[in-house]
Image (cartoon, rainbow, N blue to C red; front, side, top):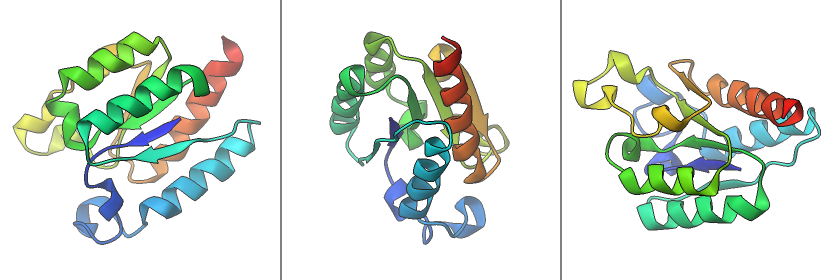
Length: 142
């Protein structure tokens, strides 16, 4: 399951110098196509609401074998999302379009990284495909 957090629905128009010009729909389609090359079906979700993101994580427990998540700003603030990810006991792959460590100091801390199999940041939207690839390999190796 690919889960995207707040404001990622604005990709393509939101700060394109930081996030690029691809839309979330473009990224989801690219990820679905890439996942299919590994024999994996992608379920994509996005919400600006913390509670809805938690519901998607809970849904993943029964619908997915791994979670690729870009929690957006909730990366730095949401213990509830971290707790939900821990509770479903699925491998988690954290993704960020920008290099959060080269940005404002408050973005340097992630509540998710400590429970993630891996973190990919700073490679633009191409990082999504790499996260899908790594999650697919992780699933097949487990």
